[in-house]
Amino acid sequence: MKILIIKGNHGKTTSVHLNLWMKALLSICVFGAPLATGWWVGANQIHQLPDFFQNLSEGMQADLDQQRDQVSQVTQDTEKNVRALSLSMAEMQARITRIEALGQRVAVRADLTGGEFDFSSAPALGGPLTNIGADSNLSGELIQRLNALDRQIADREMQLNLLSALIFDQQLRDDSSPSGLPATAGWVSSHYGTRTDPFTGLEAWHNGIDIAGREGSAVLAVASGVVTYTDASTTYGNVIEITHDSGLVTLYAHNKELFVALGAIVHKGQQIAAMGTTGRSTGPHVHFEVYKNGRSVDPASYIQRTVR
Image (cartoon, rainbow, N blue to C red; front, side, top):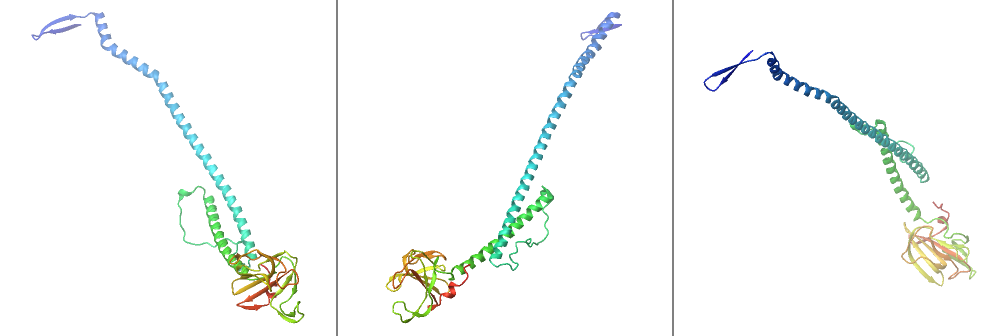
C-alpha cells in the first residue's frame, strides 16, 4: 500500500509504502478507537439502565401510595360526615317528636283541636319542581330526609308560634277576668244583698261577700290589673281597689296589712294583702266587692267561675 503526501503550494509529493503491520495499526487507529469508545459509553449506559428504571418505578409507587392514602382519608372523612349527619338527623327527629307531643297536648288543653293545629299529621307542602343538580348528591336519600326534617321543623315552629300567641291572648283574657276566691283559705260568712247588720241588728244592704279565715292568711287578686285605690278608713279598714279590663273593678277590705302600692300592676293569684279585722269588722275576714261599669254586682258569679 502506498500513501502520497503533498508538500507546499507547488504540489510536490512524497510517497510512503506501508507494510502489513502498518496497515493493521492504521486500521485500528482509524476504526477501532471510535468503536471502542462507543462500546465503552454504551456499556456504561446499559449498566445504568436498571438503576434508572428502578428509580422511576419507586417514584411511581410512591405517588400511587400517596394517592391511595389521600383517597383513604377522603373516604374516612366522608364516612365520618355521613355518621355525623345521621346522628344529627336522629337528634332532630327526637326533638320533633317531643315538640309534636308538647304541641298536641297544649292544643288539647287550649281547646284548639279544630284541625288547624294538628301536630300528628305531616305538614302540607306544594310548589313547582326544582332540580338541585347531580353535584349535590352526597347521598340522595340522606339529603331528602334532611330537607324533609327541615320543612317539618319550620312547620312545627310556625304552628307553635301561632299557638303560643293564641294562648297568650286567651291567658290575658282569663287573667283579667275575675274568678275564684280572694283568699287561700276561708269560707263565705256573709252573702251579697240584704242581711241583718251584725252591729245594729237591723236589716241592711251588704255590697259584697265576706270570706272569713285566719288572721294573717293571704288575700289574693282574683284577676290581673292595676291598683287604682288604697286607703285606711273607719268602715273598710285597710282597703285595696284593683281595676281590670272590660270595665271590672274588685275591692278587698278589712286587711291587716297591704303588700301593694297605688299604681302597681298585679297578676292573677298574687298576694296583695294579709287578712285582718280592721275597720268595721267583727273578726278576721276579707270583704270582697265587684263593680262592672261602675255598678255593684254579686261577686258570687265570679267566685264560682272555673279558674283556668
